[in-house]
Every structure is written in structure tokens, then in C-alpha cells.
Length: 102
Image (tube, rainbow, N blue to C red; front, side, top):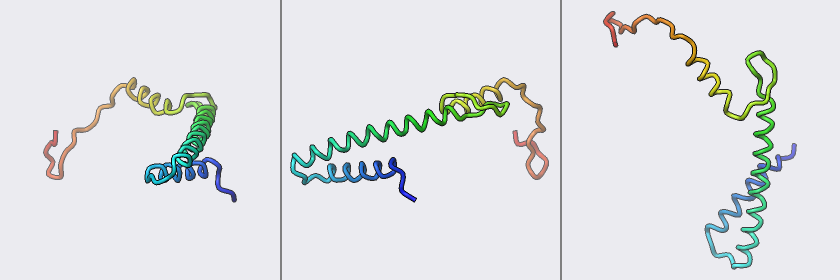
């Protein structure tokens, strides 16, 4: 099975960054690698944006139906739903000797 293109691009980008950070490259080579790195970074950003869009499309609502929803909004909705529910009465916490902790 072939390695996904995103992972290969990311690996190559890491190699370029390491080479540029260590220095010692002639200016012309450094500029060529920098340009290659910028192109790879743009491809990676595009791939991540596309993956995020797919996640948004595939999020299911409470009824089990698929609905479009921004990435990360599902957790916020759950927090909002639990905040709107009336609090349930709980028994006071007791330690092992039967005294109240709070």
C-alpha cells in the first residue's frame, strides 16, 4: 500500500526545514529549497482544509442524520445542551467514615 501523499509531503517539508535551519547551504540551493518548501506547505494546507471540509459534511446530528456542521462545533453543542438541562439533585459526598466532605 502506497504511503499517502500528505504524509510524504510533510516528511519532505521537515527535511527542507532541517536543511535550512542547519545552514551551510549555498544561497542558491537554500532559495530553491525554500521555494520548494513553500509549495509543499501550500499543498499540505490545501489537503488539511479539504479534510476539514469532509469532516464538516459527515457530522451526524442527534437524530442520526448526517448534517453539515463546522469542525469542533459538536462538542460545543453538547456543552450547551448540558448547561440548559436542570441540575439533578445528588447525594452529598461522604468519606469512608461517613462524614461529609463538602
